[in-house]
Length: 225
Ligand code: SF4
Image 1 (spheres, rainbow, N blue to C red):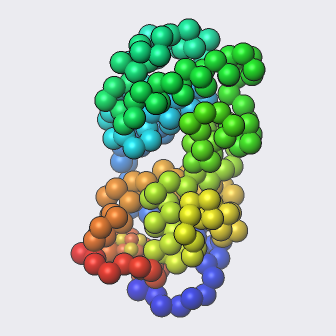
Image 2: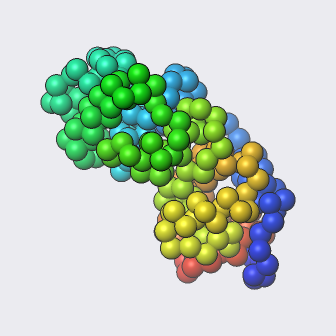
């Protein structure tokens, strides 16, 4: 473990991410990344990301497939009864609230954006149930626009590594923009989600098996394996 408080350089952060990527090898992708790779459809990525909040990956994938088997376009989903959307995405967490928001998002995209998901964070976060995390994931995976999606894993690991000293995901996003080369902005989410699920877990991370243990300041880590 390094105790230095030296600011992380873009060269260092890229090297650490390369090592994490190499350690992960050919892992199954997180659910929304899988949807992105298989569909290349920003609308499906947006809806899948909304479903994924507080929901396990396998539930998200199945729920997305059931919903899009019923209706594929924003116009068609907006025409579904809210109850039908809720039944399709059950047992995703908060499925009734999500069903309401999904129908409304589909209506707005259909009526106000001619069926195309908007391509700016400002327009995306104006949609119901869409925050910066979802907006940035859609921009990155849906449109290839460099944007950092900071979820709970990215926020936790960036702080443990000592890359940032932040209390909120929004602050982490702003801090990461300064120390991550732009070519890693999209990939960092997928890499740290998988690393956070398998190695740098919320409780008692597996530091003894971590490929970047020598570069990690382990900030706030009191129990480790
Ligand atoms: S597992 Fe341990 S060493 Fe690896 S990134 Fe997390 S806190 Fe750092």
